[in-house]
Amino acid sequence: MRLPSLIRWSSISLLLALACEKEAPKPADPPPASPPPSAEAPKPAEVVPTAAPQPAAPPKLPAPPDVAAPPSDAARTKSGLSSKVISKGTGKEKPGVNDSVKVSYAGWTKDGQMFDASSPDKPTSFGVSNVIPGWVEGLQLMVVGEKRRLWIPATLAYGERPAMPGAPAGDLVFDVELIEIVKGPETPKDLLKPPKDATKTASGLVYKILKKGTGTKSPSPTNRVSVHYSGWSKDGKLFDTSLSRGAPATLPLNGVIKGWTEALQLMKEGDKARLWIPAALAYGDKPARPGAPGGDLVFDVELVAIQ
Image (tube, rainbow, N blue to C red; front, side):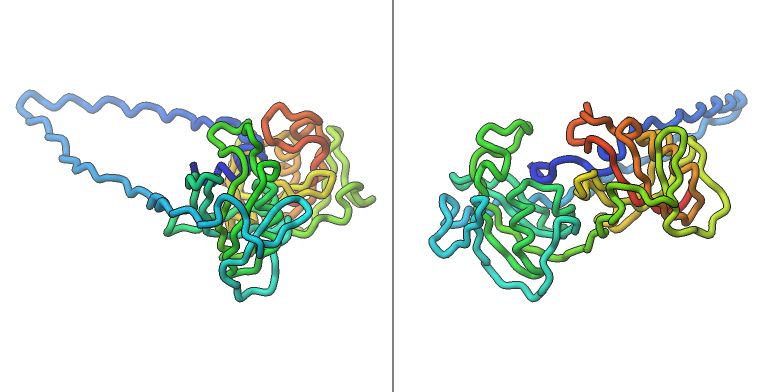
């Protein structure tokens, strides 16, 4: 089991409600003309198969000697999380819930079975708010360069009987090294109520251009677009941002939630807009899609390019 055991839901494919995108089938090439009787048919070029490079598997690390229970010098929070600094870091800032982090980690069950770890040659990046509660709390105690051991009770992990297939049950122990903090976007002050100068469309979508771009064209529903975005629920929780991945998301405009499809057609390349999207144009008040945010949503979206 790898990182999906920690992250509660996928970002782009789930939170933007991308349809299972099907590329339009390419027309078949016309059959080659038959060679004249005297011509020798060309021999097919020899193809030498090459093995695709495989990512390095995480090594099976021995369980810490205190895996069964935290030692007496471990710090314990009100929630029941226990932690201990294994090696001090050099940073001064701690990540917040809207930030993203890059970490190396390994996890064990209380009986010492290792069930998850980051790749030894590639640290893992994700949003602080997108992982199990014990990690959300534990990461906010750390500074860059620090390595900390977390003893996470079942109530802050997956529970005694996890609903997620393959997730480890009961209390868990993680060794986590915080490598980098990527600051997240600030929560909009007008999250709950659009300003008077925002525009409302017939569908109920409300939007405001925050920064005008230099482009002259807008996308059509059949275009693919590259965008940077951040999304908040009405309670102020940042549930997804492309900024944590360091690159814009590229997606089909007719494969996202209705509020996005409408709003992006009102924008030009380079524009940055804030969108207040009612539940009816997003995932609804009670989303059928597991993990999708319910109710009215607010997005900051920058239209980077139209393809």
